Amino acid sequence: MTSTAPHPLLDLPPLTAERFASIERGVADLLSTRQDVVITQGEALLPLEGCIRSGARPGSTALNIVTGPYGTTFGNWLRDCGATVVDLTVPFDTAVSAAQVARALAAHPEIDFVSLVHAEAATGNTNPVAEIGEVVRAHGALFMLDAVASVGAEPLLPDAWGVDLCVIGAQKAMGGPAGVSAVSVSQRAWDRFAGNASAPRRSYLSLLDWKERWIDGGRRTLLHAPAQLEMLALEACLARIADEGPAALMARHAAAAAATRAGAAELGVAPYVIAAADAAPVATTLRVPEAAAVVARALAADPAAPLAAGGGALAQEMVRVNHYGPAAALPAVHASLTALATALSVPPTAALNAATAAWDGAAAAA
Image (cartoon, rainbow, N blue to C red):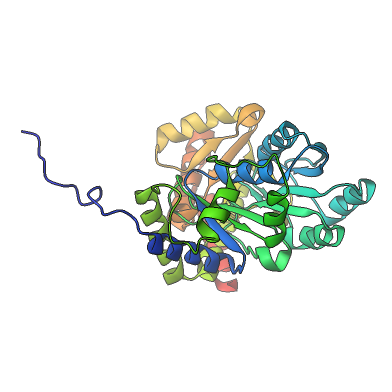
């Protein structure tokens, strides 16, 4: 007989506007921002596209910094909006520098929009946003940052860094749900959106709808029924981060990255991102010939190991060790290294010892 009893996780009262607003305040606290925060009801590509389609328009010129695959996507959206796009592309095994950004802005003084990914989980690099933000602010352009992979794993201070649009997702370092995301929006960005006749309105992509109907209305009436389970998961995620402490969370990710890099060296595997300072703390990418086959063998040995082959053309040369959220822990790093050692027919002991030593050293330094 089929049970008709209510399920405790599904039989929930509607999420109130007051509780929705309190979760927004939690996100603002996490980002140390005084800007407006909008929680968007979908994966982070939703606010990222919304920001670009609201901020770019025919006649505008955008500097699109490409340090990984998402930069390519942003460039496509910017062109779709009619903007002239200047792509600043750097090798995916390094980071862009503030000096490179400054030169691009000087060569194109008409640039009024800059898009950048903070940390590229797909390629394992991270970019110096604080220094880049100074350059962009001096130029006067609107600055959009994809911080989906960096939030919780490394410092993120949109107000202090002059970021006008800071998009985050909870599914990586925060250890939360993938189906909800958020963006902090400066007043300059709101003004830009309002003056753009091409900006989405009466649309799921519209951030202006949230500004005019939610924020300006005193946050009393939600635009539509929110994704309730995802919102509650985000609330729980924020509470867990507050309990652990953001500094401790970032230290755990840094330790996982150091341990993975040290262990991989003992396996005879080189890092994909050459300089440790350019490597993102959410994922360590490794140069491995026939990477897809190696990952398949590793996952056959341990299906739970947080490993993946690189995407697209990188599938045959890159292995990605994901160590974010709950996987930013020494046992998860050990599991990845052991599975890789099995796939490569290399004894794991030296790699595990090196990883443990690096973890302990990073933890002591924190």
